[in-house]
Length: 76
Image (cartoon, rainbow, N blue to C red; front, side, top):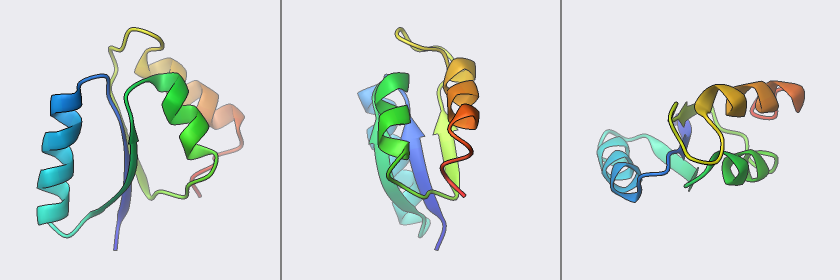
């Protein structure tokens, strides 16, 4: 089963995405409402895919991806 992690500042988007993905048989192993929270959470998880919102107030999606790469690809 595919494991997915979501990072988005919109609670409505997160809830809708979780519903849609789980209905399709995709396991959502976690989510975060900010880039910083997502980076912290991903250090302990091993998703196959991470969906990241590009426009967020604390840290944009591109910065999140750069930080995750610095952590030596924590979601292998």
